[in-house]
Each structure stands twice: as structure tokens, then as C-alpha cells.
Image (cartoon, rainbow, N blue to C red):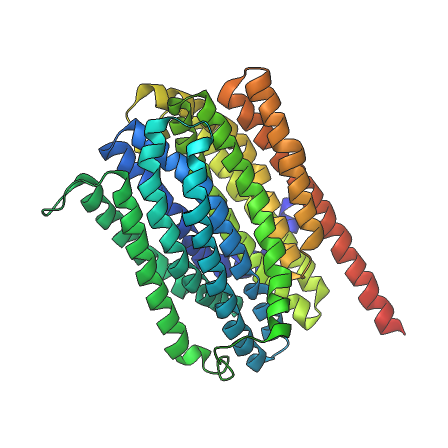
Length: 458
């Protein structure tokens, strides 16, 4: 049985992984920035400032994924137009996406600067944690603008199947971020110790450099000349609507999931700073595997978009199912790793025994939700490739905000199960999303196959 399945999908495994691996590394870049921030602060600035990183990342990630989601609307459209060999349309889409993403970035910065920095005082968090959090959040707010420029050119290149370039930019960006972060936080080479705000400054510098390098590469590389012949900075209402019709629902999908985890972090913050720091450790590690799964899902979007553009539904389904197989194997491996290394991994972040003890428990729960987290993000990726984004958005809202967070509150706060109970609620939300999205994929692809068959017969 397994041998027969492997033979059937072997070529799809190879194609998907070849496309996915650079995206995985690139996607990890976003998470590794925050992971590096947590590690540096945890070792050089202490538990209170680590809790501040947890609070800021929980709030900022929600804002960040709104921007990333809008930018992501470009990728399936580029993949579909490339599949149809409409090269000039790719350049027009890029120019409109750049304008949309810049406007989005300015709006998100203003939202953080004038709204979130004030709101953070009134959500029941430890006052010392809030005091450390504010300057860090201020730097991250400014970094949204260069990040969205980077995302524009990254999503364009990846939609065309050029995935290695963003990977290399992300790798070098993270190296620079870590080096500068240690220098600023610890205080080296005559610079006064900056604490947690030092990692905010290093992240801003890193993202400015990444945006500069990626934009210059795309605009000057010979690989993209055929695609950017019609690139002209401007705004076309019809093309902008096409991008937003996909980007806005994707942003909401990200927002519903990330806001659920952000909401969980705020609930945990009302329990205590130690629990909040432990949550940051466990969620950071889980986020690493999630972003790797997200890279596989992005590759699934590109392959699905290409096959959808060509009208090749047989390859579309097989490629998508192969992505499900890959993610199940990968997430099963990471689940086992989290379970058996649960008491060791927290030492990467901190030496506080209280934080380590709680984080070790959470990593066992994280081991279970790895499978559901991976399959739901692949399901979303495949459906995006077909332009199916509205129903999946409703599914994510139901899974996280009708089921996940209320159940987490019931178990964690009402029934006094603490941080573990909140995580059980999140796990059940992920399970719900995973199952409903797979059902949607099966229904959608089988309906398309029937529709294409009827068209051919008439």
C-alpha cells in the first residue's frame, strides 16, 4: 500500500520539495527574527524583559500578518498568469501590489503608533513588562514599511517559481539581526546596554537591508526582464481589486489564527509573568515548525495556481495530496522531537527553572497540535492557489474564535486549568480548521473536475 502510494506521488513529492525548501527557509526568516529576539533577551536581559518580548510579539504578529496576508494576494495571481503565459500581466500586477502594500504598511504603522502603544497600558499586564514592551514595539512598528516592500518582491519572485533568492536574503538578514541584537542588548563596542529595545532596533535595520536587496535584485535580474516589461509604478483599479480580493481574505485568515494565539497570550498574561514567559518559549518553538509548514503550503499554492491556470486538474489534485503527505510526515517528526526534548529545548531561551518547568509541559501539548497546524495551513495554501479564499476565511474564524479561544478560556480560566487549559483550547481549534479545510479541498476539486468534464463533453 505505502509502496504503491509512494510510486504514484513520487514525482510530485520531488517537485513540491524542490520548490518548497527555499520558501521554508525564507518563511522561517520572520519567525527567526522573533526567536532571536527572545533568545538574546532571555539570556542577556532577564525574565521580565522576555515577558515583554512575548507581549509585543503576540500583539505585533497580528498586525504583521495582516500586512503579509495582503502581500500574499500577489502570489497565486502571478502563478496563474504565468501558467497562462500572460507575462505582461505579471509586471502590471507587481506594480499595483507595490502601491497597495506601501499604503497598507503606512496604515499599519499608524495603527500601532497611535492605537496599540496606548492600548497596551489597559489590558491587565504587569506594569514593568509594559514599560519594557513599549520602545520595542515602537521600533517594530517602523519596520513594517521596509518589510512590506520586501514582501512585495518576494511574493512576486516566488509566484514565478524563483524561491532561492528570498531564502538567501532572509538568511543573511537574520545573521545581521542576531549580531546587531547581541551588540545592542548587551552593550558592546562603546554602545550602552539597550535591553529589549535593542532587538527592536536590530530588527528595523535588518528589514531595511532586506527590502533594499530584494527590490534591486528583482528589478535588475535578467530572469525577470520578460515579466517586468509592463512594470510602471501606478494604480489600476481593476488589477488592485484582483489582488485585494485574494489578499484581504488571506490577511483575515492569518489574523483569525494569529489573533487567537495573541488572545491566548494576553489571557496567560493575566495569570502571571512567569507563565507568559513560558508561553513565549513554547510558542516560539512551535512557530518555527509552523513557518516551515507554511513554506510547504506556499509551494502548494504556487503549484496549484500553475496547474489551475493550465486547467490541469489531475496534476492539481495529485500535487495537493502530495503536499498533505509531506506535511504529515514532517509534523509527525517534529511532534516526536518536541515530546522527547520538552525539558531540554526551553534552555535555549532561559535558565529560569520556573519558566522551564511550565514551558516543558506546553511543548508536549505543542507536539500534538503540530499535526493539525501543518495540515490546516497546507489546506489553506492549496485553496488559495485555486482562488478559493472566502469560505476558508469563515472556517478559520469558526475554528479559532467560536471554538478555540472560548474553549481555552473555559478550560484555562473558568475551570482553573491555567496555561495548559488555554493551550488545549487552541489545539482543538486547530483540529477543527484542519478537518473543515480538507473537506473543502475535496469538495472544491471534485466539483471542478466534474465541471471541466461536462464542458468537454458538450
